[in-house]
Length: 389
Ligand SMILES: Cc1ncc(COP(=O)(O)O)c(C=O)c1O
Image (tube, rainbow, N blue to C red; front, side, top):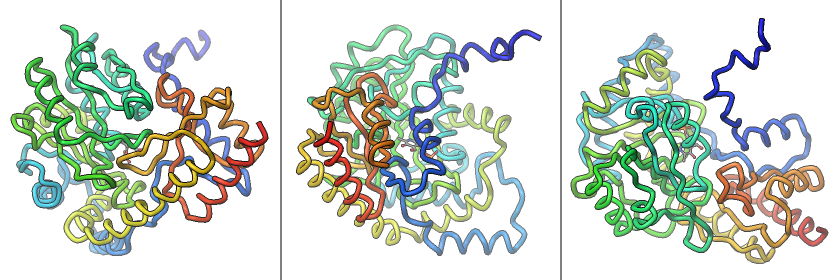
């Protein structure tokens, strides 16, 4: 047999493993590490959501569900989108698909709309899965550069100049991982006008929509003429502290949702039934639990921003999510080297900005969904590290 590496598809072999994972693996099993690395709530899933899942399991609800997801959950998603998020009304029967987190939704969305060579515009730096999901689906990512100077935002002018005859879609993620950047309603309207005039699909990942601190969140598909053009992605992982339950959803034009359902049907079948029941409870009755957690993130956001300012690192004020993305350019170290040394010398985990794209170089991502003690101790150690190098 030829070497095994020759048996692996070029597409997969050419994709780098996630730069975030690499750091988690290094940390596993290292005692006494302070982590601001994982992008995950530090809350346990609220008890009423867990209880609902346990109750349903106890009553024998252990089967597959409809490929689209439980109808009760799709109805809850539809009502929640309109009543709580001021989004458009999606038909639970044909415009909503329940997925295994937004992760699966991004994947099947790309596989459903892209033909080989089709281009997808995205900002650099951005969430780690956007680029590989495009290339693995045979598409071509078109990166638009951003920086701390423009608040890490993609502008309508950037989009215009990235558009070619091959452009199929743009993926927006706001508030963003890793930068926390978000868009005002007017900024989104300007983007929607280009999408409309150039006839491109907008994939809008709004998983952090409840974690906003500086102004209201606008659901992209609620903008005039955008409902049919947008594939709206959201999920329970972040705002409802439900990462392990693996529930997300995609909403959009019935034909696109049907196409995504085909890929989902053959590769996944359905999201796990217990996660779907817990999600129903969260969306119907979990608003105050969610607000309690968001208030706590808002307080910790202030704490970490003040701490970073005191240390003397330049940092964009994030509008949402639970990350800060300060610059470490003045240290002269690459972000990878900075993070490795911070881990080995101070036992503090943060993620190198380069994991999110070339424009993330010179930055580090700190997740503040960690205890106040952990945040304070980690900041103290970062300060000691900076003083020493
Ligand atoms: C911007 C963004 N989108 C999607 C995801 C995936 O979330 P999940 O698959 O848990 O719904 C994440 C997780 O970190 C994220 O930050």
